[in-house]
Length: 107
Length: 118
Image (cartoon, rainbow over all chains, first blue to last red):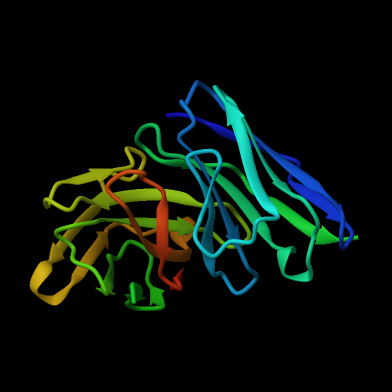
């Protein structure tokens, strides 16, 4: 199984700040990396697919990059609704696996 | 519009079988894959298995011996059955869909909380 390691697990930040979340795969996943946001009520929505493609309806302040085993999600200027959990996920192989999550918190 | 909704019991006794239903609308089960993902309280997401558009299934090897996924295309429903439940099976269970490439999960159900307890 491909292990996905996210960092940091917790990220205190301020409104308007630029933040980056990292995700490392235990082996190369050829850009088959997706990012999801989970709100406190449990609602999960996709943000970025195939490393850098923005899901329809997602604000352009979200962006993704990376290659090989290392990937990142960047939010350019934090809005109040961005404080949530974030997960990376690989779909290069089965079983699909997720990172442990990053809790983006208001500083 | 595309929707997925999980239903089933909120409480299951240890050693019993969990049966969940994912009812979908806005798309056909013969054109998209449907997956089950679960999340223990306060923890991360775990992929459980998949019902492929053609009826094939794939399972997480960690759960394979206990897990079965099936479907009824006429009712737009995908079913999850997992036996020999233990307390660490407590959590929120989601069904989700992927497109037939790229394979990310583009729509999710709201999730259903299942507690395993006597």
